Length: 608
Image (cartoon, rainbow, N blue to C red; front, side, top):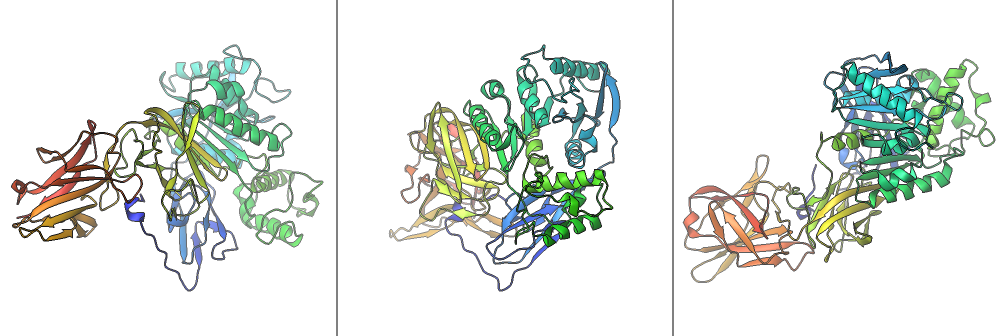
């Protein structure tokens, strides 16, 4: 759902007497008081179905595309359902390429090939067998990607080489050998995009290797990233970090370093995303995300933690489950659990605690980054807040950006745009100068902001910070970027305009050129009679030029006024007289041209 600034000039909420939260195909945290943060989880992916988003009252969710997300409990009943896509079951293959054992799967007509790089001591095969990694590979394949993984060369340390720079790096040599052999075997084409995902040391190698590899995009988990890559890599990059990471080579200092390297990356005008995942409640079914632990065993583990007061009143772990000195939980586990099952318990507990453990709760971020990098989805950038279109925005205009997980709920600036609204801040960076971009409103999937006056024309970067999430989008600033607001709030159909009627005796009245229809607003009949008619179009991005025209049908009209609307920041007004010659011609398209740039098309209806 897209929200228009026009429609949010006033917002009200209707309370409910009782509140219930009903969740299907997933799980919800137990504490759901109005105003509290509720946590919801989708059931784990399987071989034949993968998570496809939430349905129902998704307007409350922080991120309706995430298998784990939150919402602020409203004073209203909430019903949610985790939805899934049915997919064909597939089995990873094992082959030898350039003398290296590779685990892989290549669907018909893949959109790209994603290499998955294991962490210290891991293996390529584990990327397809571990419950969380297998869940990610299922998501990637369902999105059309081929996937492949193999072991690092150094099996003594189990680490990828992140010291040798360039094409002579031993692991890069092996990687290029595998790629060439897969191409030679005819499994992929020579131009198929290559992408990298890695966890921990594998994430470091993914980022470090950008100097030698032609990665279309890189996504890394629980690692700082490479300093050299942060200063040189031109592709999109995403960081996923755990707030309580306790790895000796990462930890709190590493999380801070990852932020600094993200800043180096995006300050060069490159698209980037950074997320620090916080702890989440332990729900009774959580451990059963692993196929090695039954639902009954998962519930027993939860009950043991609850009985020992290892969970607080909201079911958050009170201590680090990865440190026996803090929380020695293993002796309390049922004797029937095997060592493999205890390892599965450990991994899920550490994921719950937001430690140094990969959990497949943000696959949509990686997949979205990858699909946009290879042109399968449009490039993410700010657009006109009126038309939701265009490749540039203008100074003193209203711009909109669509970002999943931007805010926890809808927040509207009560006294105009605000630099910090609902915890969301934005800046436009041009060169080394950053200027606050205040928000008209923010919501879980969208925000509209005022492009600061005086922003230099040319390349810029919109940087957004919301709690522990950050995004940066390359942005083009142009002198004008006209967009007309529409009654439906989507940049299409009848304009959100006012018609002034002046009678022969100079009496004046106003009406709207839109009316309610079966599926929204439609162009209302405009009838002249003996009156003169003047139309006020409300737009944005117009005022940057003294050369403004309105095109109505085949006729070009010079407006009586084109410039700032004095009541609302960023809002422009274009006023012109409607020619009587249009009486009775029916529906006509209209648009604004400002500084040679054309706006979106709106519809007027000149009835008999």
